[in-house]
Image 1 (cartoon, rainbow, N blue to C red):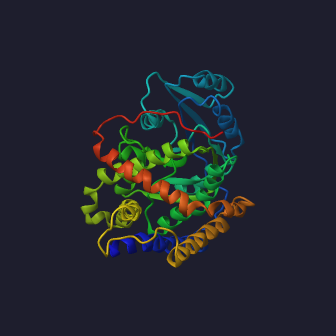
Image 2 (image 1 turned 45 degrees about the vertical axis):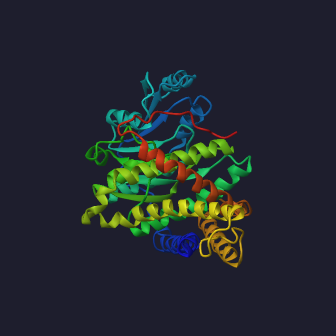
Image 3 (image 1 turned 90 degrees about the vertical axis):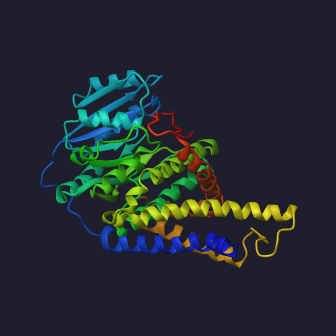
Length: 406
């Protein structure tokens, strides 16, 4: 049992140092390079927007695209059996935009199927996929296209989502989380060479790369994780472009956050199951660190929970020496872990402050991140893994109306 307790403590400590080191390396050796903003050419780019009951935000999202500095583009909105006014609003927007098309799906077939249909209908070789609540920065497409035009093996690029709703503690913590945790993870993974997933809310794809892997799967809860692995297992390169900003809405209630993170956990476990055999192939060795890190994170969630259960169980019955848990409250080891994690948070905020002034003010709210979100992530992982393992293969992953915050 001592090994279990040591793993529960040292794993997040080790990963904090890995992420800080990777974040530093990416920032100083890659991110600070000055890429030319003038492109040698501007081929057609197709912007794909899957929609399901988005009447409250879709107008703002599409009108915001009018600010794009990249002008050679078309917009394809996919209405996936919305039951509100989404289709009516899309047709109204289409009347004033000759470069916009609407695909209407009369039955709920899921985001993956919608993106696949839109990709096949797209006229452009380069696709930018955003969610219906996303406000795309004016220069984002130009930053994406620099990678595509200069590196033919780049199959996808993930952007930098920024949380814009900040009216609750849950929302404020997520603002800092996307800067100091998510951003650091993607920077570190890019240094390693492979990325666990593109951001489903903002990502760009080369159409020929998608065709080579059969486009998106329609039976995966998280289509963004799945397409990332499909592309990389076919040796397409995925990159992280932190300058490609996109302002998004996130859940601001505990219930909404729980549903979102449970879906993420189940989707990650589905990928573990689906691509486990591919990890036996020596040719896929570069993606091994990403796969096994996720395996260890799932293992940590179960052992973390076991530690808490053993602590309370010891209060009811006397456990044999060696397996009892004397305390789950922070001692000197907990203080060390908390300090290191807060250092990681602060470094992430400082790196991302170049994109958003005043983001370091979120440091206070992130003090609560290790305690609250570790427990949440452990809980959704414990539930998400069996849901993924017991899910029948081929079951369509259909839309559910997302929580867009207050």
